[in-house]
Length: 419
Ligand SMILES: [Zn+2]
Ligand SMILES: [Zn+2]
Image (cartoon, rainbow, N blue to C red; front, side):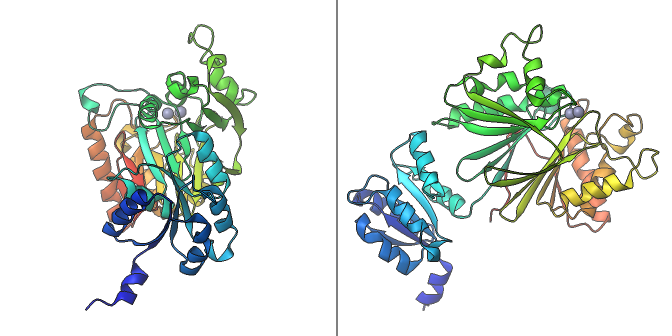
């Protein structure tokens, strides 16, 4: 016999408030089929006492309801201390960016469009309830794009990674040619206006030269901020505008239709869109910033380009190694410059990039959970990247390390705090 009480403590509870009984019937079935308990209220003015009583994991609210609209009810729920852990998700046919923005201002955690997509509805709801954030790779090569048969599996585009958070917050790291792949994806999948932050590690071509090909920059209504280190007296705005000027490119940044602002970053701590970002100057020619995102008890580090000199090198700096280890300490994800095999590195000391054994030591010594090999040399083939992953995995095993090594593929997504 099934014990109802113990079942209940395991099953999450969703409280649905919508005056449309057809919708509540569909939603109830979808939720129950995927293991939720469900309570329904079709009269919004009567919903709050029921929500206070059952303290659900999640409240699903329609917006347009007679008597008390969903936004007002959302605000009332947010004012209740006992419901601080309850996620609020709007379920509405209103697809305007304005309505989404308003919902977030009123304290909503997510926004799902009506009619609910039967295939993905519960998955999307779960993502919002768990406050999942994900890491997406759009270009994993370094230095130069490498089209052709030797890069079909991993992709041939240069550096671009994005991190996506709840409430449609999107952070992009670097604008190598991978940002064109991201651009295509965003245009295909985003119905509403796009807004994002673009963090630049440094001004070398393979990290900035596809900025002019990011189509959302040319769409009125989109909003972006480009952030990165100034190069001495050359601001990040100058870095971007210089390559889109004069003999280099026929379109200037003045022709961006979106609202695009710029911010120079330094080594330090920032809070951006409610997310903690730390920065550190890396070992690379010029000013190159590494980034660490801390969110919800999880962290992602983006550390490229970076040269880790071996201990026997005249350039070895123990304090830098220690500082970087502390910077990436216990990260869930470390995406880092793993350009060379050890034997290749010997001829390329001082070029600003790292070899596999040094990267393995960094990840292991810092207690990183997952190490993502990144910024591969353009002369390396897909098979070489396979071999790099095998070598690093072996080195980690030899150190009895708990770090897992991955070689991400273009367009691959990883959930950082998922189940
Ligand atoms: Zn590079
Ligand atoms: Zn570089």
